[in-house]
Length: 341
Image 1 (cartoon, rainbow, N blue to C red):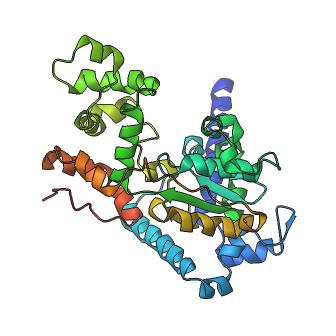
Image 2 (cartoon, rainbow, N blue to C red):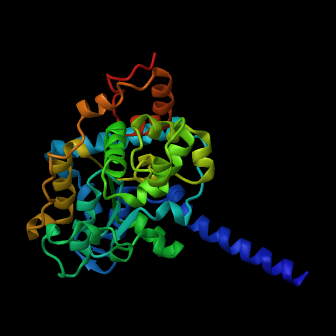
């Protein structure tokens, strides 16, 4: 009896912790109210926070870019209200992609294949206390070392709520199928990605290739694009384990119907949107700029269309349905090369 009572108490404590997290979404103050609460000091810091800077009414009237991001926020809210009827609680796993910058009051949800390496470099400069000055001085592999950046999952429920209310929350997204093709090219057509070949390639070939050679089964380094798509839409795939973050849907990584993002940047307007975020922080005045992206290796719309040429309309429809919420939430049009009817 005593053991059962203890177990009930532990369960109640755990549920209470989760409810603390969801409380932010149900009763968090409006930006105007937040501004009054925080005043001229936020978390012990003087001056306006990036969140206050964003919702400053004068700035809204001055900059057309503010209106662009306001419309993106409004669209997110509309789509969430229409398609998300039952809200669930956030779990710690949901928060592992939200990178925290306590120095400047930022929460950045990273989406792989959407300039996330350079954004992590920028976050390392912002949180490094002067250790770094130029994002490009940070090796790419260093940006992905988990211990180099804190995520929201590292905090207690009370600390999570505090940051969700007071910090500027932003993410960057990309045309879903362009991002998918970029992930395929990077993880399955590059000889150096042997870990992905063995972890995923061998399984994909085993299940979705007729009469595979012993070498292909052993190496997993020649996965065809259509085999990769069959793997994605195969019901067994997600029953066995979640999607890898490189091809997981952006909304499943960042949960925009549970976390109210203040800025939704786009890969297609990366330079402009990144400058917008850094301007809200004041980092541009300190000489910090977002690294220029390489257009040499970038996957374009025309290249994406070429990859879909051999995919039947039946599988195109099934794949589109899988990524449909990303198209709706982030206002991407159905690609013209798809045959969905």
